[in-house]
Amino acid sequence: MGILALQRGEDVNAPTIKYDANTMTVFDDETVSLTTLENRVRCEMVLPEADDGFQYQFLNNDDWHVATSTLTARDGEFYLHLGFRKESPMDDVEESPAEDRTVLGVDLGINHLAVTSTARFEPGKKLVHERDCFEQTRGGLQKTGTQSAHRTLVRMEGREERYYRDKLHRVSNAIIDEPVEHDCTHIVFEDLRYIRKRISNGKKFQQWAPQKLVQYVEYKAEERGIRVEFVNPRYTSQRCSECGHTSKGNRTGTEFECEKCGKELHADYNAAKNVGWRFVRRGLNDSRRTGDSQLALKSGTVKPNRGFAPYPDYFGSEAESTDKPRVT
Image (cartoon, rainbow, N blue to C red; front, side):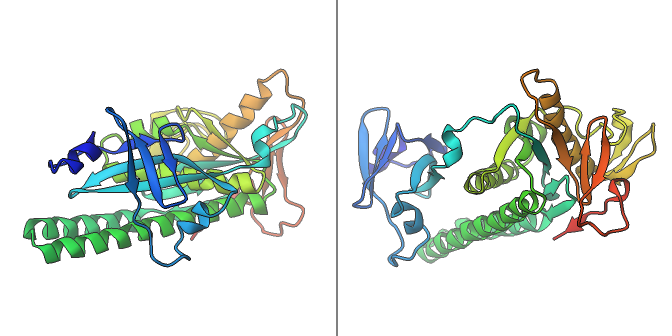
């Protein structure tokens, strides 16, 4: 275990290790107890000197509980990324079969971190570009190898983490705004396991960002009484969300044009609608459910076999067939 090796003065190059409430305990004296292969080790946590540091908003609030966290060894030091979970009234409440569902579908990726079925686009290229810049700078500092370079590297990594966290929080807030604005009961993502497979050749960061984004959305959705669900994304990028025709030839890069019905739209937007549709249809196939299910779009909702219904207060000239994306 890396912690014990570090205490013995050995070089440490450990992978990231996950901890949960069973293997980690955070104490009020700003120490943490971690389970290792040999025994349990209690370590001091280095937190910001100011009591208004963001960590204290969670550590000193009884509404938040420590959840899955990660420990990473880097340059002979350990970095503990604490995860927190807020208890929600929804935790002990099962969804009623008679409850009506309004579903927001969300497609996750890299060029766009998120695209919703209500046509909100959250770009991701800038985040990846900033990551590449950080990587180049980090590589140069590591090659320098001086104490000054090491101090600069530590400061830079702190700024880097804050930048990513701030960006992903902003995107998660934008996603949460959509179900609030459109009275959705559910937010639906593709199963995160398939995201890892889909971009398995990408950098670890490109796999980490969507997962962290979903975590942020999950706890913010709980606070608002919105459920978060996951579906198998198979063929969501190839299937026409208008007529259902599925073919690899429907999609070319970011463009989607159905070979059968001629529907044209952004490929990620098409996938977002298909993600939502998959959950809507799952409800239709559940014999226990009596409530209606519908997919939220920018200008209205659509139900299987019942067609499109515009929002009562929507005055745009476009109906669902011409919904245009909103890029933030």
